Length: 199
Ligand SMILES: [Mn+2]
Image (cartoon, rainbow, N blue to C red; front, side, top):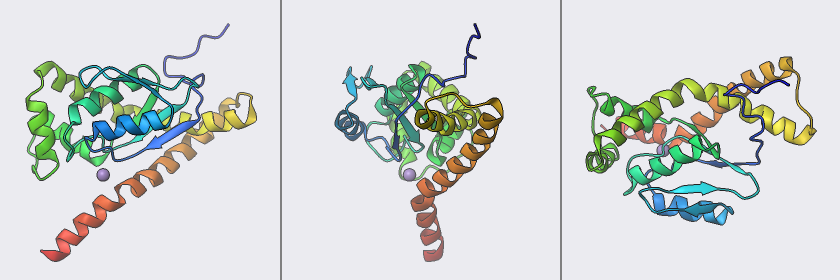
């Protein structure tokens, strides 16, 4: 019998709930997951969520900044990803937060300032965990993106796809995710342009 590769998540077939721009709003995320039928357990220190019918959440970046509970959002999503209950793609806000976690020069504006204040109240071990997690997301999301696409196809066809088809779908997945990311960041980009025009 063939053993699946560690990164082969084809058994984790959707359907998928696509969620973007949580921005530190833990209470609202919790409410949203409950409305979608997820069982949500634990408080802000150890939150966990799982859908009884096997639905998976796909977080399309910008978990952090602006909102009041960025560490709790990170704990929930990090736990869900580790448990195979969610996929996550990093957004520009995660990328910027990672720069700060790396100790690099970063312009601290509204949004990131809130995350920093909240994360400074957390233990160093948590900050370092977040740093590693964001770093790994950047290198893994392409793979998971491809999976997302062929998992959807398999759910429709009810039988596995050939390796060649998987290879193609992975490329299509990258393209679709790229498009989705532009869509998700559209508001952020427009805001930057407006600010630039106003200055
Ligand atoms: Mn955003």
